[in-house]
Image (tube, rainbow, N blue to C red; front, side, top):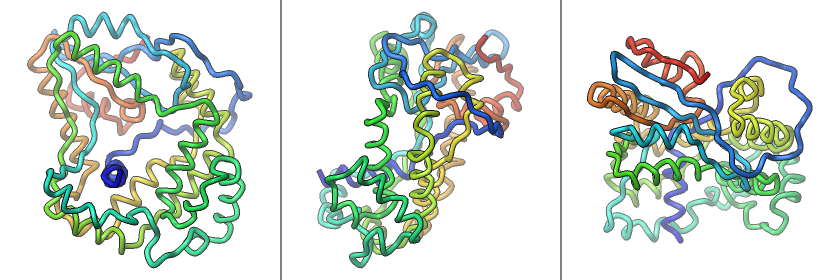
Length: 329
């Protein structure tokens, strides 16, 4: 169980993804019913040069928990492809003995330093907004008051999604990966590895360090206070492949704030292998994409929509390198 806490920290160091935001101020009336049954999601982006093609499927979170994803187009393309690129990310590597050695230091890793509570570390107005949301989503979890805001935010967000009938949507990526594995397609993992020279020491430093995670907590509250209806709209839009509707719905990007709080923490700055993670993740995926495009007639990848849409996206970077990029029709 304690090793799962380490996983939570490591996941926070991974690239957080969010949809491209829009300046649109007017939103359509909330659609209360979540789409269920079998849904295809959006079409495929096509990156090409000469006769070599990289097909990209855009994933999104959250999605309806009762929705089953299936795309005939994706399955057909996978049947013709030679290589599948896994999503970009970063993974902290801890060896077996390193993991055993750090077990004692993991006790209390989620707690605030010096026994502080949320009331002690949060501004009064933010703490006041937290209380009704706790009563609604986490009424029986009083121990959470002693946890760091970044961990409380994650627990609260998950509880809010569950009550709204939404989930993280990881099943879509898992299903695509399983199709590739079943068809014996070459799988290239693009995530970078973050070596931890002294995991136990790093955890001890983390437990003593302060985190600038108030903004992470605040924006998580904002999403649950005002964005659940829009979450349903975006989830339905993705399920129907309506990308225009997704891009029109702006929201408070708590994932970027929470990722920055962990990446900019003092204990991370003191670890050379954890520097420039965001750029290294991007460079690793782009290098794998270019290699696949030069080697295969047809390759396939999944990216979050935030990495596909917008002027600073991964696809914009490929286009700047001379590749043709075509959006779904």
